[in-house]
Length: 128
Image (cartoon, rainbow, N blue to C red):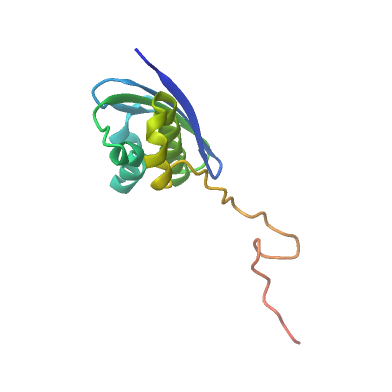
């Protein structure tokens, strides 16, 4: 039984993914995926790597996701699953690379600057 472990990150979210042969059960933080990611689009994005490689239903996946919000965790899970698949079978790298699933999204929230309302937004200018 070949088990693959990988880590995915997005924004401030981190997802630890365990992939092992099975029937397609996906557990996120000890809950079924449909319960944890209640929005359908999040489930589709998270499992996109399996869809691209046509491996839906072939692996059971256990995921520990923390930090960030649901959207960031979704991206982290997506990257984690893609990396775990490559660790299992190097032949899948090309397919996943073409679908842009192996690239870590570097975008982070910009920090707030002093003398400003937010990171870039300024306070209202008053001439008088």
